[in-house]
Structures are given as structure tokens and as C-alpha cells.
Image (tube, rainbow, N blue to C red; front, side, top):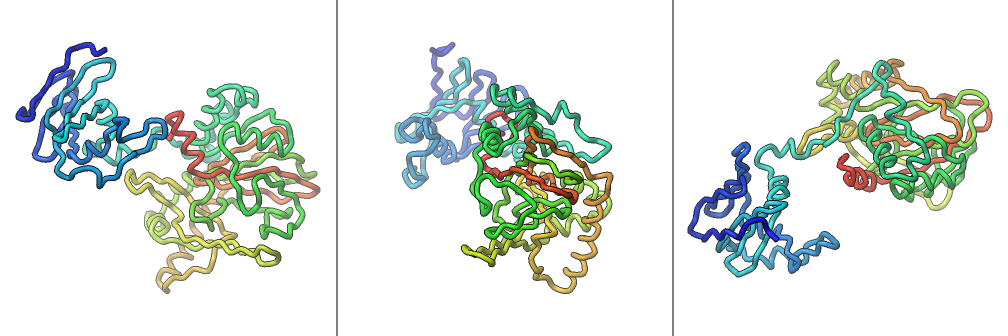
Length: 399
């Protein structure tokens, strides 16, 4: 039951003040302004009708529209509108065809792009670039297995660390591939890939994949699956058996590298932001043969907020670059500069993983690699789709 009786505002009324809001009508739109700052949020009549959440046009169980835009008369306009004050302030509109729509005013204002559309799409969480002098504390990045499995708070802590720092660890996991999968799936589903769902990296060549990970050689810092149209969002590692010598995991924050390159050479940064680079994966020695190929930017920004959204770097999977002469010259000049920052020891974090610790890495941000090793080393792992991870992050208002 509403706190106050309904107040009907006839179509001829141009402006109303009610429940702390100014609502006025234009020729094809309504303007809504909170009295706190007076900024006007404007919505066309068509936009308002299109975003009606009445059960006759929107299924709140599936969160999907149940009508087409062609079902809405382009000449739709309010016959009357009113604000109803209650636990949540609601704008009610009776349209010229008799249909009634109601909108939570706070929700409506959040959908507005007028005030600062760029700001509206900025990440809700502060992502903190790091290198060795500014490494996050283990209390921020590490979570106990039992807390992670038993509470939403534990899951939130892991997601928060991935979003803020680009990686997280869960300690106390049984050192098996089955337990690794169980841990990952507490938070997000494991993705099917060319390597299967779960994989075990050993220093043994595999016939059905073509990847230097299945060896004992050192691997420089890189992001994975640059040859996919959408690179996987998370890379997960769990050391089941450490090497007799060597085999430390390497982490480098790509967002920190971006920050350093942008400061040292803005032209180089803009080159890699605006010049897409080719990447590929080729497997031809057994069936099924495969050839994945993609072209994208090293520094990929959000199309509206302009925030850096993805860092994409892999020296191993680079395909031949189809560039003109001037681009070739710039590429090699700038690529050397970028690569030098990535191997600079100030930016390289080394982690000697032990059985029981599952490492989650944001593959859109943090590069991983390893030192060379001797003896048998078994690393269980998998990938997670970016969309699946961001979906979970949004549940906790972390994306």
C-alpha cells in the first residue's frame, strides 16, 4: 500500500514536483530531475514504452521482453503521468492507447546516459596496477578453501581480488584435478577448449595439441588464447607435483605495463591501441586439424568508458603481420620497448606454487609464464569464459 494517495497529472500539465522529483513533459519526451542536484534525465516516449516492465510485455522471471519494437506505435505518448511515493518512488504513465507502465525512479535514473554516459560505464571497482614495489598483500589475494566453499563471502573475496589485482589464490585444496575442478565450479563453470575441460600440463609432448606448455622450457610472460575471437577470461593453475628444480610461475600485470608504456612513450601506446595484431594456433600433426586465427589490439579499451579493458600479448602465437612498410618499422621499434618492460625484473612476480594452492589469473589483464625446470612437474588447469566470470562479478556489484 502506498504511503500517499495517487496524484493524477493530466496530459495538459507540463511540469510536476512530487516526492523530491521534478517531472516535465517535452514534445516527445519526459524529463526527470531529482531535487538534490536538479540535473535532468531525458527519456523519449518510445524509450519509456520500450522499457516498460509490465508483465504483459516483459517476463520478470526470464528478464526478457515479450513483444517486438514493431508492436509499439511510434506515435505513443502519455495521456497522464504521476509519481507515487512509497518505499520506492515510482513513475506511473498511462499511455494514449490505455496501457499503464510503472518505473522505479531510481532504476530509471540509473539508465540515463545524459549526465555522464562515460562515467556510467566505468568499472565499479578500483583496479590497482601493481609491480614488485606495490604487490598486494596475501591477506587481500588469498582465501581459505573452506571459507570459499562454504560462504558467499569467500567467493566474493576471490572475485574482488581478481577484479582489483588480476589474480587470486585459494589455499587448502586437495591436490587433484577433480578437486581443482570442484574449486573452480564453486564460482564459475569450466570452459570446453581445444585442450578439453580440465588439463594436466606435464613435460611430455601431446599428440592432440600443439603447445610449448607441454615441455620443461622456460616460458616468458604472456596472455593465453589471443587467437580466439574472445580470449578466455580466467586461466586457472594448481600445482599437483612440483618440479625437482625450477618451475616457478611468473606473473606480470599487463595494466601496469600499459601504465608504464603510456608514460614512457605515448606514441607506442597509441600504436598498440589502434593497430590490431594477428595471432594463430595451428595443429596439423593429428586429426582433427585446427587453425584458429584472430586479429585484435594489444590495449583494448571499453567503447564507452574508454577504460583499458583487455591487455593482449603473446610472443609465441603471433601470426605473420600484414602491415605496410611504415607500420612494420613502427611495430618493431615499439614492440621491443613493450617486451623490455615485460621482462624488467621490477615488474615480474615469481610464485613457487605448491600442491593445495589454486591460482586464478585474469587472462584479460595479468600475463603468466614459468621458469625452466628439471624433473616431473604436473600442473592441473582450465579456462573460464570472460562472460561467465563477469556475470558472477556483477552479482556482487564487482563489474
